[in-house]
Length: 275
Image 1: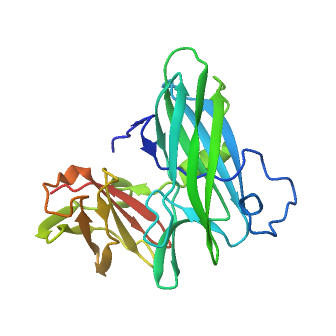
Image 2: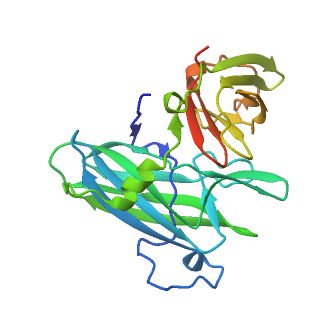
């Protein structure tokens, strides 16, 4: 599967919290302000053999609180990082660890509870300095949801020592289609009054309880509904509506779709449609 490094001055999904200080040992989360609920540490990471830099964002949440994956579901809160400066850095990619599916008040959301580390891979140019500045906007939820907005900045040195927390998060990624033994993914598309309806069919072993298919479009301005997921034996199917900003039928490039199946036992990134 190809790995894409996104342009830095675009909006890129990421998770973070309310400060860039580590949580003190034994700290308790007793209040309901952002500082009481979430703590964030920027992990400097290491320079990889191919010249890219692997860093990370560690998010510590109060017990029971959660935050969200890159596609949070209709019960979740979108999370974005907008970089305003990127000295010596030409691109970035977030390697999202395997998320969980949550159900609350009839709504579905997808994300993480308690602690999570998000590995962030940077493409760099020249000898440095390699520095970023930007703003994180996201949400955290328990029985209520709280928006958080945070300025973030960091500089990355050419250290080659691997950070075990980032390494563990990289190991906890969803499986690829090949690793999961999935078959060819078929996407059947029909027009609807305000866009398109896609039916995704994939031969795939069961991923566990609460199996959920997520369909994403590369253009975030195009809305994609939650997929209605069904399983019959060794095949999983999901049906989702895709609606552009002008609410009308449009030409869909199937390669712009990304399909992920998430269950209690594992998650599988199926990539795009093969037919």
